[in-house]
Length: 92
Image (cartoon, rainbow, N blue to C red; front, side, top):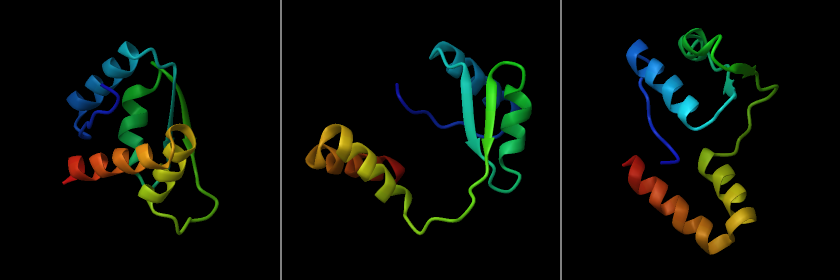
């Protein structure tokens, strides 16, 4: 499984750490949006190399537009559209 959703409850964050270990992750990067990153950082600290990034400016691009461009370069435009359509259906 490539993607999973975890809540911010401590038990779920511990499960996130286990899942990342099982996937072989050694580094974890996260955006410092508000204070939302802090519980994740506190639970994963000491288990991984943690990177917290702060955007210098806000982009007007949507999440899906960025994902489309990333996927289109790797998989082609048609497969990128199918993947994004699937992602949207999964979100709903």
